[in-house]
Each structure stands twice: as structure tokens, then as C-alpha cells.
Length: 407
View 1: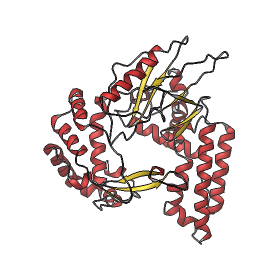
View 2: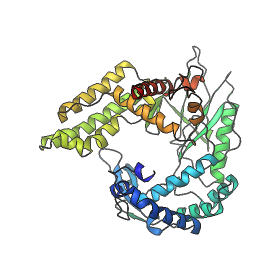
View 3: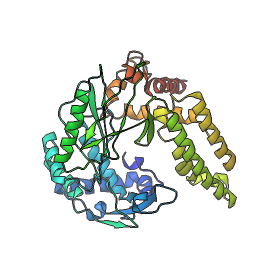
View 4: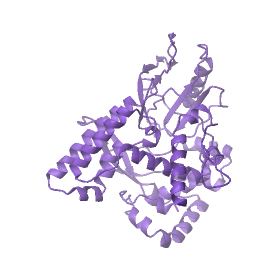
């Protein structure tokens, strides 16, 4: 199953094994790889070639001037990625998850991770001895050969105490955020959780970059109060009107105008490359067939479409559709609109959630299953936070697709 999920167009890692080969020959290779994976886990050892990564620099700006203007992207073994997904499936039920806001920035987070501390944490979580030894071996002695620069690619697991009533910590690798619901201008709980997180970072050898840490304040009250800034390591944290988190732009108005603007600009720059290739005589069908459009242009336009696709304004949707029409004109072939792509991906996402028992939304979605058919009950009774998510639109589209299948 995991071998079939590999994306065939991904570049090979240091071991030279093609992703297309693994996906195409999944049935023939699964038995052999199962034996190799089991042996690696039992011995608590990771082959050196699986830990080796080739680091490729990707410019962050159009005109990079120093090393800081490059983002390191590591090419690693597809076999190791497959085993990582299998191990993660085992670890997910052992870890909790929460949600919240203040966006922290770490200085070289993965360069300072302490494998021994992570091992102790896994033991407390009840992780098997062989598996914890295997993970510790994977995190240590990791050789890298660099085409230009170094890279970061592991995991942080942290524990800041029991979850609070209105303040939560959202952990996603090194992109951590604390969100607090402030009532009657009482932000003591929020500040306390921030301080607990800062203290944990100091104990865990993680250095917070207070200069890049930002705070986003959402306040729709008619009479707004001036909130005193949060101080971390002697620095007042700056406030912003919008922030890019996990590739999606959030703003203090809780709409998608900033995100649409960023997508439109990025799509325009990608279209320039598309036009240049067409000017060299490359046919539109070839550009789409060999993944250039999907991987370069469409990946920028439709990133996170499941998140924002059902709730952007009509004006924003028309603006992005205009960008797609330009791409269609350059290629000379018809392309799907934002709404069509968004609906298709929402149904696919909902279907994948129904098959993933470890996902936080699995229980919520399966509770909507009808006892008479494959359809889902409309989530009218869900909490407010779910009613404003992608779930209502996804359930409606999922039920429509079920009706088409039965017909």
C-alpha cells in the first residue's frame, strides 16, 4: 500500500533507486522490502545509505546574494521514506494533538535536536524498545553530501504540560504556534502557556529566534483594547496583520485575501517560465504530459485548496480562474477551474480521512456515517469550528459522488 502511494515523478535519492520503479513493481518488491524493514527494526540499525542525504539549494528570492537566501532541500532514499511512514503510523496513536496561535521561529531547530532526550520521551510514551533504538540510530551519524548546502529533516516531540482550557499548542515539526482565546482582557493563561513553552525550549536545547517570532491578533470587537505585547527573552514580540503558516497566508480579518494575493503573484511568475518554454516551440500537451504544468504552475495555484477553496470570496475565485485561463491559453488546452479542482481534492481528502483511523478527525467524520447507505449525514450538529471548515462542503460533494456511483 505504501509503495503505491509514492509519487512517480520524485527524484531518486542517494541510493539511486527510482520512485517509478518502486511504485510500478510494488507487488513484486513488497515481500523483499518487508523482510529488510523487519530486520532493520529488530536490529535497531538503519543502513547508512538510508540516512545519507543529498542537499540541493533552492533560492528563496529571485536574486540570492548569500547562503541565507537559499532553502536547503534534501534528497533522501525512497525506501527510507516508506519505512518512515510505516513507523509514523505506529507512533501517531501515542501522541496527542492540539490547536492555537503565536508563531514561533527556531534557530537551526533540527541541528540542535538531542536524540537522547527524544529517546527518553518515546520511552515515556510507551514506544517499543527496538523501535526507540532504531529511531535513535536513524537520528545519529547522518552523513550528507551537499551540492551547495546543509539541510534539516527530522521531528520534534515536546511536552509542555496538560492542555489548557482556552489556550493550546499546535506542533508541526519546527513550526509551532500557540493560540489563546482571551476573555475580559484576561490573558494570564495565554502568557503562562507561552512561558511554559519557552522554558521547555531552554531545557531541550532549542533556541527561539525572538526577532522572527510574531503574534497575530484577531479582534472583531467594536471597542478594541490595547493589548500589552508578550515578552520573550527580553524582547517584545512584534505584531503582524498577516502571517504565512505552513504555506498558507493567514490574516487578522480571517479571510483569504492575503493568501489569494500571494498565490496570484506566485502563479504569475510561474507562468513566465511556461511562456518561455512555449516560445522555444515546446507543445502544450508535452508540457502538461511531462508534469511541468502540474509540478510548477498548478502546484503554486492549488496549494492548500482544500483549506481555502470552499470559503474564498467570489472576487478572489474569479481572479485565480483568470490566472488559470491564461495558463490554458499558453498551453492551448482546457484546464479545470479552481472550484473544480477544489471539489475534487476535497472529496479525495475526505475519502482518505475515512481510511485513516489515526487522524484527529476520523471519529468526527465516521460519526456522520449513515446506517442505511454509504452517505454521510450533513454536519449541522457539529461544533462551530467544524461548521466553518472544509467539512460541510466536502460532505455535500462526497454524498453527490456516492449518488453518482449508485446510479
